[in-house]
Image (tube, rainbow, N blue to C red; front, side, top):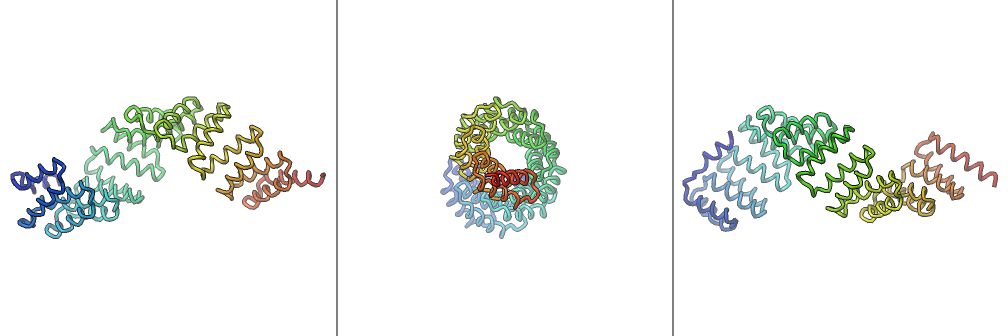
Length: 369
């Protein structure tokens, strides 16, 4: 395996490198770089020194210097899978995923049966949203070593990203068989189960994740969504409030809480939650739209009209909002404005039965005045 080759390439009895190792252990990476530069002046073919120097740059957050160091090393050792692998990960952590992928490709050319290289290339491709390509390399990594929990997990994530939720669940399950305490694996499985409509199983998976990472607002929110879909709105609200405890600026959690308060007919708390969501995210279309519905039901017609208008500024082509706005204007006896709203609907949906019927009723009313 590649790791064995790497260990064999490093002379553990090298006194100079041992001293450098002590400097790195103390966190004195700048001094380590100076010492390693001196070693490389004497021994420019020392693969271990090049590698350690690049690592020291990475630990200082100087990724470009680390990559430059590895490029120099590869001029000396152009067929070293270790150096290409290290370069791939250095590029990856600096966000240069294309560059990382190229380095991992080179590792595979040099050592085709190294599963971690296939996994790493799959990760780089996943980070580039090239999910189908990622899936192929991850599958190869699993063929070579089916014991890699990270690979099962990432394959599940790639399948989830491409809408193959059942396959995602299967892969997340395999990952969790190997590493049952992986909170992200449990929450990701919950996401896939949620998409499959298995809300009970999704809620259970989120609960298991939260037992390990209790302060994760996103998972509390997702569990709230699952419970909402089970019509367990009080429990859903408890989850949304947990999410908001850990992130009070979580606009989507305020919105989710509002929807559940509506179902419980707690109008004032629903309205307050919509308002909090909109204070945080003024372009939150769904919040403006549903806020307008609530305000109309509370007979706060002017406020409802304002809310529909804000929604339509964000999505001027949404026939639902135009239809609702027209019906609201009928209630307010603003016939001309109502007619304009129904005409807007018919621009987008020429055969919309509600708009056609409502428009005809408004015209008759206007003729009778």
